[in-house]
Image (cartoon, rainbow, N blue to C red; front, side, top):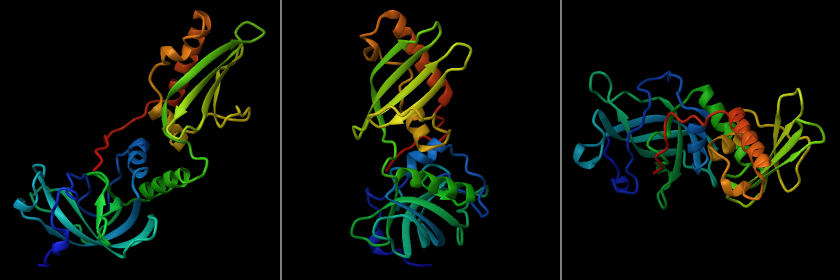
Length: 281
């Protein structure tokens, strides 16, 4: 049995809680939604594919807070592919993780299992990682890797949509013929970059909506595709109702039209489905 290095002695800063990870390879499909993955990927300074080389189960007295039916492991792994990580990463990794015991009440055999880790480096300890959430050791599948890479590719673009913090104002203007009109909704963002939503109504046609990133409303803008970063920012960041203060200056008719168009946008976006609420470390 290998001896655990003293430098990874369990402290409050590196303790992890339960991770829902598979017992064996090949890994089953991950039942995480796009929003679940985006929640984790966007806050992780390190995303790396690694192969577990060895695990050591910590004794109960060195693993406080472990959930019933779980064990805390000290994991040694080899970095295979660095997806994200400023300044690179050590080829030899170590971290702590809690895993569920198998049907026989034993620690699952994870040796030679490939995983995708979403983590942060432990300051002053090269190669040592802290998972950013209890469930941030993901079973590696082509679908998981593709989704993580797609989220990071969008997030690292200079024009990536920022987190939405609220709605500043909205207005509605009727067109020249009955049933024609346009609603514009202006959003506030964490980075103070403007985002606006436009909804166009024409008689005999389905309402059309689009999103513009910038000061000028782009007439060629479109609605974002589902499971994209802009979709995630909107579906998971917009309030469920148009705030009263956003339409305080409108008369009742235009205000009602603005509320209706906003409800249409939410319906078109669909729900921000989260099956695994994030508990960041």
